[in-house]
Structure formats: C-alpha cells, structure tokens
Length: 317
Image 1 (cartoon, one colour):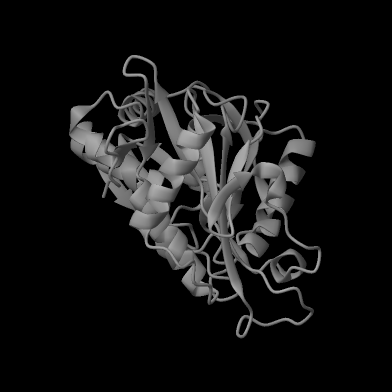
Image 2: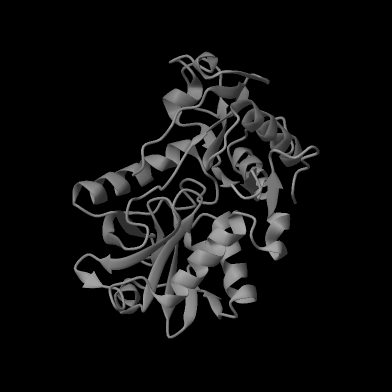
C-alpha cells in the first residue's frame, strides 16, 4: 500500500481548523460503541487542466446522509452544502495531486450507555493525498475469507457504519497476514458478496456479472458508475445476480472496484489462476475508461465531476 500523506486541516464543529485541533474525547460515544458513519470519495488531479476533479460528490454525500439516517444521526447539511464545505476544505489544503476525502458523522456525547436516541450528533471531514489502496492493482492475488459479510438484519449493509468495519478489518488482516492482497467474502446465504471493502465483478463468456445489492453488498457509487460505463460506453452485457463460490474459479476475469481500490484486476484466487492468470481485456477496457472519466478526459461524463479550482464551483448532480 502506498504511503499516505497527512491532512493540514479539517472541517470540525462547523469550521475549518488546523488538523491537530480536530480531536474528540476518549468518552465520545462513537469511540466507545462504533456509532458513526463515514464516506469516502476521491479527488483526481488533471495536470493538463491544472484542475482537481471530485468524482460524483453529490451522490457520495447523499449516501453519507442516508447512512447517517440509518443510525439516527443528522449531519445538519444537505449534499450540496457538504460539497461546498469540501471545496472550501480542499482549496484551503491546496492539493495539486490525487487525494482521498473522508467525511464522518458520529454520536458525540461523552457518556456510557448503548443507545442511539438522546445522544448528540457531530460531523467532521478531512482530506489527504492518496495513491493506490493495494499494490497489485493489475494482478491481485486473493483468497476466500473464513469470515462472512455482515448481514443486513444485524447491521445495515447499505450503510457505511464505522462499527461494522471491524468485520472488514478481520477479513483484511487475515488475508494480508496469510500472504494475499485481498479477500473475497461470502454472505450468510453462501453467495459471493464483496471483498473486505470493495464491490466485485466477474466476467464469464463476455458477460459482466456483479452481485445484486440485496446480497448484503454496499450500494457502491463506483460500482454504479462501472455498470453504466460497461453498458453504455463499451456495449457490454451487465447482469446483477447472485454468484456462487465455484463460479469464481471458472471466471474468465475478475475485478474489484470502489473509491479506495478504484478498479483492480484479480488474477489469482488462492492457488487457481483466473482466466489466463493476467488482467483480461474487458477488465482493462473498463479500468482504462474509468480512469479517463475521473480525470475529466471524457466529455460525456464531465457532469459526474465537480472542479475544485473553478471561479464558480457548483456541486455536480
């Protein structure tokens, strides 16, 4: 994994402050009980235009607010307002490179007691320079995890709830410590769900297949974008259906996608090569197109991007 930079500033308690001032007490409810939600999005630097583009910020903040609502948190801001806050934050940082943005909403009362009602809410946001999430983006080696994907009737799978990511951490560390780059996770029904923190796509006989959202997967914004790019730009058939474990071994291609991981080819599952054992042509087409889109090189998808360093930067919808 690439070395991460560190923020200089954060949006905290309603204003942009030096990062060192954005602190919480050890008694904070979210710290003790995982009662928070987060979002993740990227900014992509286009050197030719000297512009930093935010990828679908309105959709990310819309999901962020939906996640918050699942555990009775009110962020106090609309997606449009959050986008303007983010633009101000990034202009203050002055990034001229790719970056990752992390909004957080959390139960902020300093107290002991497990509940969601009658507990105060707070919202913060920071950004940092960020490169690759995994090192082997063009040929990841993965395993199937012994852990199952968190089940929606236990913790809402559609929300990015902080406490639920203990599940992801168990999955990821076991995979890395066993020598793999990532892990694939089955849901409680025994079907393929996600990786530790990314959506999954499989290619069989030219058809692009991904698990449906009711299979306890996150409603990924990059996932949604990949489906549209594959169907509308590349003319590929895309099917959302459940995937059996044994189908993965028989796949012609396999890739992961998400804000952090972006688009990463999986070329080996445990001791079995996927297809030829190299990144497949469909994965490469999707990956190349995605990076062109997020860098602002495809006019058709410029409406997905919000420029940071524009005279009148307006939230993209």
